[in-house]
Length: 418
Image (cartoon, rainbow, N blue to C red; front, side, top):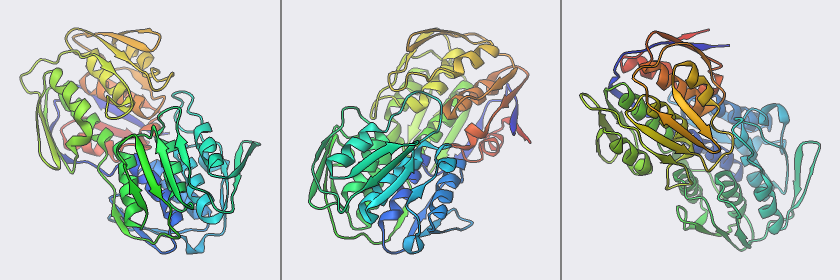
């Protein structure tokens, strides 16, 4: 099992390119099941979760070709199975996104209940409830969702909770349904908007993506297209925090500043000087003091839960006392105990972490517990005195492309140990 050995104390400095968004690429890969002709997807990140999704499509008989430029060509004309088995789905929650496309195009689907990061309960009941309202016959037994439908029927769906994967699954199901579907209290994340843009390029009729009400007019068929995945806003945010914590300078290329408004506002509040352009972000922390900032996670466009752990690491070495309140997932502070091993002063009270900044963290062996927690440990290690060994980085490989290479490119001392 690979580990990262990090020697702290090196300010990051330089330019890197931000990879394509994992959380956009996964539903877009699932959406290829809706097309009757080949689909070319560009700017797909080389990540463990992407490999899992490609493997899942391949298990169904879909022909998938990946070139050296990370473009993925998908041809569903060879599909011979409508099942997503447990051995693949257990490692990645996003596998459930094949449910809607399989059901609406082929009239059947058998999908294992999903796994993924152990950050709290993320039930798929809203997916199932919405598909039933559209006329699907669904049973959940022996750990599998088994669904059947002649043709899904358009209807009005109200989501009790804002759910990204739920919105995406129902959006994909609706594009081939008969009649109009309205999704109310829909997720507004940029990744949902990117999926809608991709579906529209395939011939879907969608209005309102990026708002809390999405309207879909079902069509008879979708055809393959060429589509480029948007940049990963969480990867971008993570490297910005890394540069701020180390007192360095960074310029991110192929980055979307508009998708990071809440994060950039908090980094400015923390003392960073930030400039942005259409597709780049520049952060300068040289000669500036890092100030603690209060964080409260909520669905987009508010502060993202996927950046909470990174800001816990930032607050651990910032001047002052801060609170980090997590409202999206109930079990997303597992990184706090590991940050304690590095010398952080963080106290948990319910769903809030109270951080008192310390002048120095110290290297120690730590263990990653989920994707974003692993990123927070890497950030803390970059400023810790001495060596830090981060174990179980397979979590990190699920969501960050070549992280040790990018950090080394920026001047960090980071080495992967097999």
